[in-house]
Length: 457
Image (cartoon, rainbow, N blue to C red):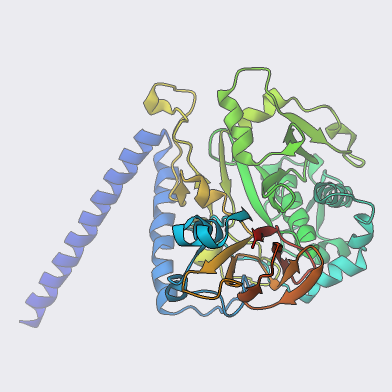
């Protein structure tokens, strides 16, 4: 009896294995044909996906790693229930009842754009960041900068000048700019070997964006590692940095030491990508700095050659906390699923009868929503309580997403300054013109974007 049961179970097990093998083989052959990839590569990617897709489920049940998290807002931030009593400042003054009270008003209120995908920021408390800033006198490097963009370019120039592009560095985990600056070993002359012959070493367009990103983090900026590619496989690594000056993410190529501008405004990846749909000559230009001692890379770069590389682009890591949080290999925060690919719905593929551009075979997260890719930070949204109150008192509340939040700086009537660390403030009005402005600040001393109100009683 026992032998019969065991035999039946064995037959069932073999039947399941055979069924799974057939389904897997059919899936591999189908995907291989659709994406024009070899069955071996397709099978490898599909197997990798099956393994990685189980890890998020497992880490929800038990996550052995407890990451350090950067604070994004005050501890008393407004939750969903609190928000019911508040509206945005401009909506408050449009209300018919409030029009009678406040006949003249002006509102400059930032709107926070949020992504459906989580991004993890580098915590301020990482001591090595402060050592990097102090030991290499990064404040002195930007001392003569008049604007934020000038600070970014000066820091990019410094980062690019620290190493010869022909020298590859051995990979370290976690990535640590301070360690690499102090290290005299673990380097290799890449000019003697093709890049594919140097496993375990960073390529220049991987190394420089990472290195530049940690330099920016040490100075209180927020960078993210990105990648451009024509085919969707491999590509060139860059950095996008959030700019308070321009209220947007802007692209910085630390490897080639350049960025893109239109009418003096730096551009992000998508803005360069959209030039594909414009007629030549393109109305953007490359702003490039010196290539340190690497003469072979000093030759001019043609914008017409660079735009095709921006056909496909992605955020390589939805995090910049590499120095502090070292997740185990395969963890959802350290795998393919920590990336985010931007999908341009206007981009023609081979299925739209343009054979030159083929669809890419990948299971990485994707989005065609610009807000998911270009969320905003370092802003302050002003809300006003709608409950009945005194005519000469406005109950204000504030929202922000400011990595390593420190405090709000408030200015009343262009003169009275104060600092608060909570999300609520009672604004006592007086006869005449009342002015109110607020901005967030982070623990590095960087000030955020100003929102302001002006009301006349």
